[in-house]
Image (cartoon, rainbow, N blue to C red; front, side):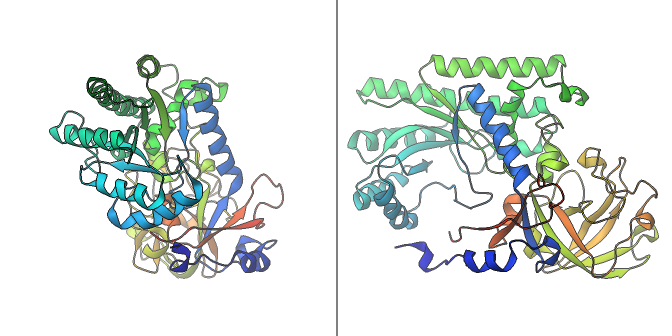
Length: 441
């Protein structure tokens, strides 16, 4: 049964007719805006990197379209079976971290006639989904998966990890080392699987080692770095970075030399967000404020002169937890930062996200946010001709664009994106399309 029956999508034709050609200043707020030029740059960089490194790439669309990535459950089988019937062999991959899940995978095969590709989910430190490679639970899952593969109900295809704790990193070296830890853990698991299969006479395909949370996936671009514009980055050319890059490149060779394949996956790379800027997994020439493709347009409803810390102003905007989410960013205390868009004399930040000076959504409730002034160390949203909020006042009725902390969460609250293209000089705010979001669970 199609999930569209229960989760109908927004009417694209009506939205296109109503909004294409208009300015994002004229849309109902709060609204999600996608800068397709930035998204295009981000995608091209990632694809160029994996191509140059001869790595596999698993397109991961949970950020902007929301295909959910969880170990297979019994309740998901009917919907997955319908998809498998339409798309055929190789169309469905499932994650496995509990022997009981093999029954659900077998039922999927029974209902669809298509054996799903099975990937054992490895926990390499994040303590979310997955099994630790050195644990007895891994042995149990591996044995069950091998038996299911032998029976034809699953095609055991590889290992999969997600280093969610990589968001705690603060440098390119940290991101590269975390990616290495991901691949290393799965390589050990792949070797054990291959040995067990050989001992029991089970024929396996080439096992794929699939790695990548967003910071670690972005980190692969460091292996193809070297452009002149990266000279500004403090890590470029350091012995620590060079050693980390060399070490990871050698590990990729080792994996391939053992007959396995390496694959990269990640979620937020097309849009990026403040959390990614705070992780510093790439040089600022490839991971900057200009590369954040998703913003939220919100309107200022009220201004409260002198109410804030040290007598600074505050303002109320019509975007709170329901529009922005509730995930914080380690770089600052707030839920979003205000972009320079539409604010005379305000520049794009030239500092790290930790040093931002300007308006932030410092407090929030369900349906509204409170703008507070962040007195940072660098040139954030500050005016060239004035210091502090006195030189950068906002007013009731003004529309602002916000950089979100976590694009995956923020985008989930909207049924569509208003698409703009900053490469269209003189028409940067004109809506060129409306992209409809997939809905449902």
